Image (tube, rainbow, N blue to C red):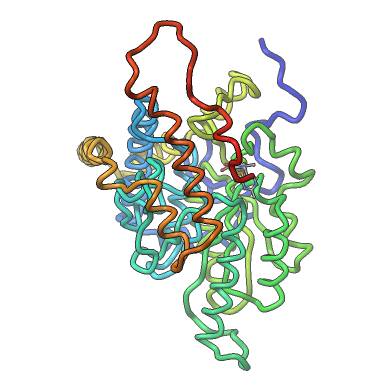
Length: 408
Ligand SMILES: Cc1ncc(C[n+]2csc(CCOP(=O)(O)OP(=O)(O)O)c2C)c(N)n1
Ligand SMILES: [Mg+2]
């Protein structure tokens, strides 16, 4: 048996973490969590079936996208398998007009809010213009610059608060929108998160910080990012932080619904840390076997959120074979449509790199012109290669470092 490496994550929740579904998918109404249980009682069966649909759909689309990347159709894919429970629970707890500020892994949230697979995958194809109408879906664009979106979510929440209460009035007792600031365990080490939390606390802003602690920041375990459960950091900013079982969609729902109500009614920000697990690689460019053991992966596999949730829904009569089959059929159809959409992405429809240069600034800019000229020169280095017949074992003529004088 491989030995766990120092600091390797254990499939065990920190003391006091809120968990309602046990490992067998049976609901335990633990009175220690009494303040969250009333929210659970508001979760109607239709909403639970919807959460299940979101989770199955995300997982199926995720697998399709991974295959498409492996087949050279996408530049990159960021798998979210294992995190469906955390995302479904948090999303179900929001109002339709609450704003989501995602990282790059909130596929379930984006899809469930109506972003199409094509819109989502254009980004991972590397299209010149990708994205969606943030206003329509109330989902901001994906943010690859770690933690930047926590600042955006906080700033937006400030705007919401001021719009609703005016500049001089107390926001308390307002009942308006909130923002959900998604970030990861690794991003929690970024200064942006600190600044966001200070600011949100200073002005009682309606923001829920939603940290998906999936135990890894690429190859760095979360134990390196923090000595304490990340939720405990909230105390230092003067607001509440709760660690919840991120593989338990019902617990995440109940805790996030409570947190959202705090934020919505003017009590200020809350930090929800969903303790979950990134089942796959960080991205398709990563190989997790280099830094974690098969034993660790198996231990977390036993906590699979979809299995636990489905077991619970079946046991309570919320879900039956017919509904499960219908959802899986829909997911298959969506996967097929996704594949078709991606195979239909051509340079004509997704644009070229020149489009990126053209749209970086509204007006011409000397630096952009310089970089574009360099790029054209670099690309011209491939001309021989394209026209020359293939030479077995021949040396590549591709200039690795680009032409001389390339901008630094
Ligand atoms: C500001 C910044 N620094 C570094 C990176 C490179 N990077 C991309 S993802 C990542 C790890 C993020 O881990 P975590 O926040 O736990 O999110 P996860 O990918 O696990 O969902 C790093 C370091 C980046 N994108 N942005
Ligand atoms: Mg992480």
